[in-house]
Structures are given as structure tokens and as C-alpha cells.
Image 1 (cartoon, rainbow, N blue to C red):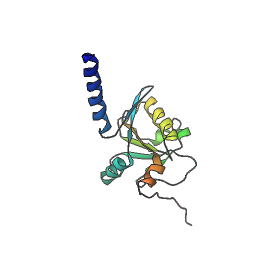
Image 2: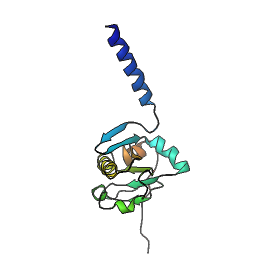
Image 3: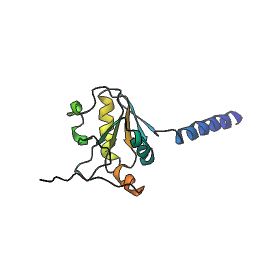
Image 4: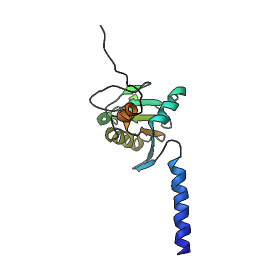
Length: 140
């Protein structure tokens, strides 16, 4: 009984540490893993941007400030040439929620990228937190 309580306590300590860990939950996928980050973390990271930010949502419905590219989640593998050549470069992907960005993140990890992050809740969470989206408009 006592051994079980100690094990349970240690597990609780580990989980508590993970709950407050920067750049959130680790998701294991074939070839490695990616991590979730919150919109608050992303907002802070954008102040000293040193990563490649990709909107993978289709159809296009706006973007987060600082977005470097719009690459459909369906085209991730086919368009690896549009991502940084350095497989250790930090890449942050997002979509409207998490579905499409989860697929893209998994494809990037399978392609050998080792520093991949997913914005938890995507554009919906960004707006819910009070931030605004940008919209690319074409002017002639």
C-alpha cells in the first residue's frame, strides 16, 4: 500500500511539472515527437521571433501575425522544400483548431524535423484569447 502511495505521489509530481512546462505536451508520432504550445506562449515567442510559423489550414480563413507561409496540411510532404532546410529549425504549425496542424506536425516529424510545435487550439483559441487574425487581401 505504502509503495503504491509513493509511486502515485511521484507520478503526480511529474505530471505537475509537465503541466507548467514551457511549450506543453509532447506527442509521440512515428519518427519522433512534436509539442503543443499555448496561444499565450506563441504571443510571447512572437516578440523575439526566431522560428518558422506556418498556417496549414484549408481553406484559407486568415492567419496569425508573423506567419511565414501558408502550406496546406495535405501538401506538407510534397512541399518540404518550402520549409527550412535545417531539420533542427524550430517550426510552429497551426490551423483553425488542432486537426490539420496535428497531421502536418506528424508529417514534418516523419520527414526528420526535430523541433516541431503545434499551436493548441489554433486560430479559434487565438481569437478566444482576445488576439486578432490577419487577412491577406489582394489589391490591384
